[in-house]
Length: 218
Ligand code: SAH
Image (cartoon, rainbow, N blue to C red; front, side, top):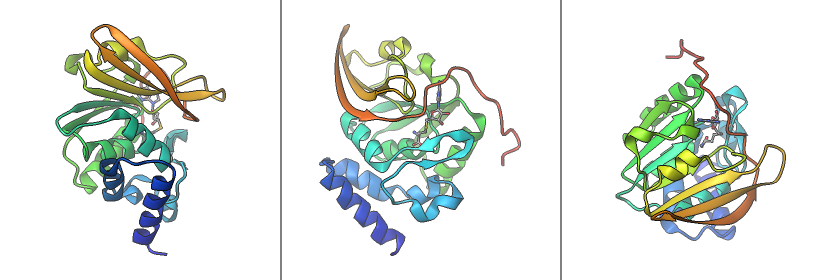
């Protein structure tokens, strides 16, 4: 089967799994996931599974990327903050749907690789930062949308503070590692936050501190 045929099969599977937002499906169709997986997993780029990347992290399952992106309700003019760049794939999908994506990763090595992949995929509206995403990006706040792609035991307060107070949406997996985690969606209006739990998931944990490794990466 060709990669194109595998990709079509994946899109059909996502539709069957309840992803109905055609903008989200077309963003997934247009982002080359094979660029973002590790080279030894290129054959599995369009399988509906999470795959290992460097530093013991993972590129999320396409269904989970689609589900979280749909839950975020991104509009074209929006500025979106992502915590946990990882492979860069989720950021690339978001970049197709909004004006600008700001993404924070704690491993320098992963961030450098992701930056190279954005270039390879000709994506120009992603701004990266090495940092601890639990602090958000205060200088650039507020954000219309915030997505966290690592599980936090509780929602980092800084992220709630940096959410637009006019219908800002935060989507985050909440729960401790190896215990029940759920994707939670928080909507902010003024100082009122409504919270709903959407989907059981398994994410790598949100970890404090920055790792300045991989300085020699090209
Ligand atoms: N969105 C990614 C998912 C990567 S897995 C993708 O599409 O591939 C989660 C990532 O979150 C890992 O790369 C991990 O290093 C990163 N991470 C964990 N804790 C973090 C923190 N406090 N700040 C920033 N990134 C963090």
